[in-house]
Amino acid sequence: MRNNLYSTRISNRLAKNWWTLTLRGAIAIIFGLVALAWPTLTLTALVYLFATFWLAGGVLLAIAALREHLYDTHNWLLLLEGVVGIAVGMLAFIWPGVTAFVLLYLIAAWAIVTGVLEMITALQLRQAMENEWLPAVTGLVSLIFGVMLIIWPVAEALAILWLIAAYAILFGTLLLILGFKLRSWHNQHQIS
Image (cartoon, rainbow, N blue to C red; front, side, top):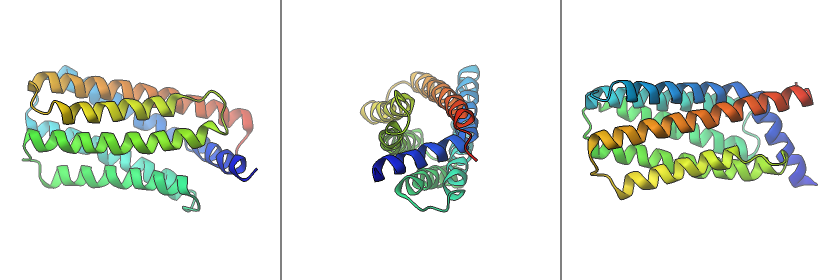
């Protein structure tokens, strides 16, 4: 009973904050499209682009967590994911001259941490929302992307850029779909 009540609170919280997922998804898609449209971006421009993506996503996650006063594990996980995004974004802004190799490992670390946290959230959410698989898929995509960057860090720069752009578009699309599903669930359950 306690587990079901806990997962219902998580679902309600996510549903109330559906717009943060939707906005994160839109930002990711825009980032991916920009990376595809200008493949000759300099490394510094790419760093700033990623830094903006990380900061915006981290801030949105932190807002969602702090709106609920951090009273359970899920809020702390959201806050942790947000803090990781903000920290990585700030590091990228502070040291924009970072080498491509270090940037790839920063991206890989962020993707792996984000993937694991999203998969944990998916397990908790699944108890309240039947057949809800999108958070798990989003987490798995992030995890696979991060591992791929670690395994092949010295691949051709253009191929890495396309991989990053494709990941951002896929990740963003999954977040948009989940955000709109949560909005619909929110409207059906009249969550205040």
